[in-house]
Length: 119
Image 1 (cartoon, rainbow, N blue to C red):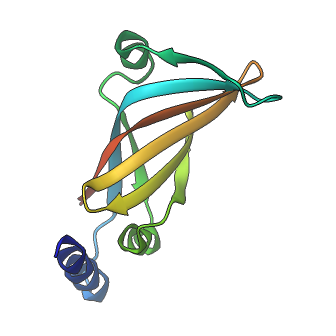
Image 2 (cartoon, rainbow, N blue to C red):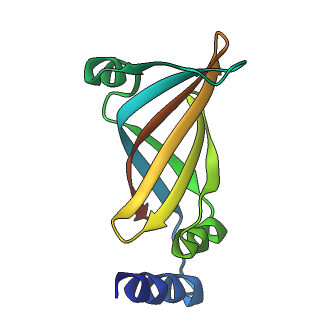
């Protein structure tokens, strides 16, 4: 049923002549690091570490064409920030986000939830 309402919302937004720009805001709760060469798990970032990196979270503008990807419930690249690449997936529980970056030979992946706003 939620997918039905999301589809109706997206259709309404795309058919409107006054489409507003969309912004996605993500808050991250977990972070993990993996070695690039072996893929071995190195460790987990604590809540305080994540807060020091992101504070209240990140925001980035989204093109309206990307919003239809949320309805498809498949992971897609939403954009870049100075902290890394943001990937999103829409689902029954809302929008999940991942931010990945490569630092000092490590792949770092942060996970959390996102909101999409208009206007």
